[in-house]
Image 1 (cartoon, rainbow, N blue to C red):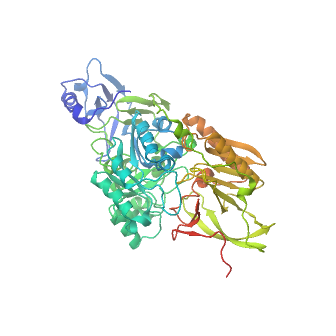
Image 2: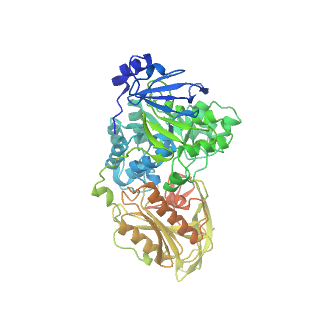
Image 3: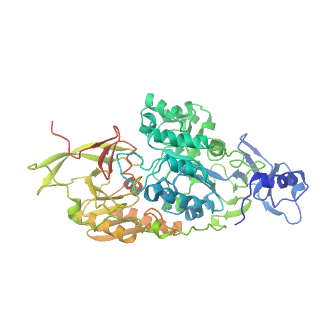
Length: 597
């Protein structure tokens, strides 16, 4: 792979080609260049040299030499490569190399990634591994240094912790673009010294602070969070959220992931309220391998925004120039203009956005959906592949929930899953007691968090509703945002034990057991989060997980994503951690059983 040189090292070449004194490496003719700076469509030509745009104008004939490669756009639109403003590669269950290989054919040429999943498992060293593989790719993968591991100190225990000193160290790494989403928003609001020190270190490095304000409260707490320095936020779910963020000088990141559908409810701030679209960015946050293989990546998000009534050129701005500008990279990315990296897409329709030809850094990256470049792999060490340490094998007894002495029923706190949304509901249910053990009933089944970082043998047991499971079954996953212990949800304790033990055996992943038999498994041996197999292979196994969940009675969209978020103790209302049940409305540990009135 040819190394992309900094602008200063190729400036003379760019000027010479634009002036006609030297030939371009490549010229694109007969296309309609879409200007992101002016929202115009221009019958222009494009000349490229050393991986950057040199000339963008009406006629590039003077840039053509004997060896210049001519690309006939055949009347198609020439648009910038798409940028994902906020995402977690680990959510695709793929390494950076395989994620890149999956999304390049969909026109994504730039990603701003926050590897806080692996940070919780392997700490700063894990972040460095992700960062290093990201820099090896033929497209642009910028890394945000994770800010919160643990995401909520005192409410969970992670494999490693990230310190302000770690953040300051990482700011000097070549691929670090800023600070990852500041999930500990109560810490910022309350002036936590570590959170403010991390933000200060990022700003001192003149880099961007990512936000994460997962609360409906837009009063003084929100204003205090904005004052703390986060420059963007992707946790909005309503038009009011988008407007509030942009009025505070933040970028509102509207996300469409595998399970998050937050574009339609917020884009009306632009389409109906007439807000300036420069403050809005499109992103995915979390996308599974199956979504990438079948539905796309940022191309899917742009199409969705257009379907929601957004002008196609504005939707493209929100997935290109706006994103680049936000991260201080407007002179590098986001538009087809001189000096920028030569990342572009040829498409025959701005509304339907078929990704017909992708060029990254001036070379063919994908044509008609077929990858044309190599995405190199990092040599992941053994310590990254051996991360499931849960102590002795589990038995059904580890998942027993004992009732108070003499009780024949209890009122229990229950985590209520909300389809297609990250928040849960804090519910109360009266549950029966049999032989001294509390049993689920109806749609209420058991959930357990199995400690897997330090081999403590700990198991936290509680209840969850919303999955609709029927019959003896269990689903287990070491993808358990953000602490990434192991979450097991089931209707029968022996199946729960079998599922947990199976994941310990394979080094992590997801599996489903029904009636004592394994019905689906996807192995994720790298940190218990990722596979270095191709996306299509991982997608087939992940589809098997969803099919097995459905066969057990679950009808939720992307139910494995809902499962993986049940330990995310920074998003309301009720979650589970290795320390117990967490009421995220008050950020307090609460007992499983409610006291009788």
